[in-house]
Each structure stands twice: as C-alpha cells, then as structure tokens.
Length: 248
Picture 1: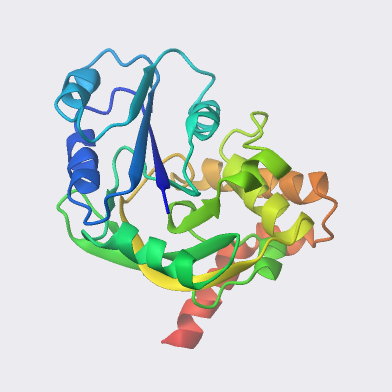
Picture 2 (picture 1 turned 90 degrees about the vertical axis):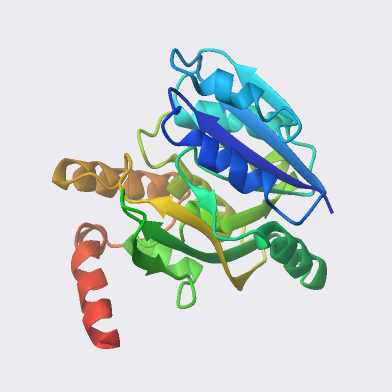
C-alpha cells in the first residue's frame, strides 16, 4: 500500500525542517511525499533540497492559497491513501504511517480517523484532541475531527471532488461534510495519534476567526443540503466546554 503525504508550505523555513525529518524517520517505506510550495522567498526551498531522497515531488509556484495548494498535491498523488502534514507539524512518532497502513489493510474503509496532540512553542504538549467520540452527525453542530488525523482513499477525490476554493478557512470542513454526510463514505476510528501540531493557525486565532468559521460551517452544510440548527453551530464553543466539564 502506497501512502501519499502532502505538505503545503510558504516561507516555512523556521519549522519545515522538523516536518521533513519527521517524514524521513518513518519506518514505513512505501511513501510518496509531495511538497507544494507557494514560491517561498525565505530558505524553505534550500532546506527542501537537503531532503531530495525523502521528497518524491516538489512544486514551487504561486497559488491561490492553502486549499489550492492542497488540490495541486492531491492531483499529483498516486498513493492508495492520502494524508496531510502541515509545514509546522510532525508525525507523532516514527511508526505512524506503518500503523496507518496496517489499519487500512485490516479494515476496508474509505477513511480512517485518528487523534492529534497540540504543542506550544516550548515543545510542551498542551492538548490531545481525540476523535474517539466523534461521528459524522456532529458535523451538523460544528464539530469535525482534526484534519491531519484523517487518511482518505485517494479515489474519493476523483469521485467527489477536492477542496472548494470559495472558503476562507473552512474548505476542509466542507470536504469532510461532503464526504462523510452527503456521500456517506465508510470510515472507522483508528485510535492512532497521527500528528503533533503547533498550537495556533488560521482557524484558531480568536473571536473574528470564530465568526468566520461559524459562517463557513453553515455554508458547508447548506451547500451539501444537510439540515442543521444555526444556533447550535454558533454555540459550538459552549457545547465543547460542557463536554469537557462532563468528562472531568
């Protein structure tokens, strides 16, 4: 089983070497590693040149943003399954892709859904985000699994399309909604902690971002003709707190 991993980057010199090292350290051998660079002006490409034995395909050109770059990577991918590794993230350990391949070989599903951990600039783990209790119905109230913890069969993108570029920060939500709810793909929780992610990012940067995400969740559900309650989507932060307190 070939696994295609896609990393999108732009001026990522401060973090991307750890990402490359993470891929290089994987025990699994049948990896296709695709790097899509947005024409970086820092040392990103120079660092990438050090990992030519790891990187299968690298493209450096202007793009229309994060999701356009992801689509370029998917179009180039030839693996059986596809995963995303962001340019400031790393695989949680050296056996992640070996574990993912084993899981997909043992379970005939369209997608596996796992866990991530988040760490701060000091390298301290601050949160584990598990999909253990997630199911697609929760998309209707604004909850999705961590994007980097999902591994999809590549042919899903051919059948159902890639990321829609008219979303600012919610194209991943729309795609997951389209795949899991509209097309009812088969999936299973893997319980594999796939990725260690740096805290922050475009979708977790304050109240203005929260409002944009709320609008785009509603847009994603409406586009795919999924019934939902707009108030519950807007209050998703409250429900997260309630869920956390119930676990305490």
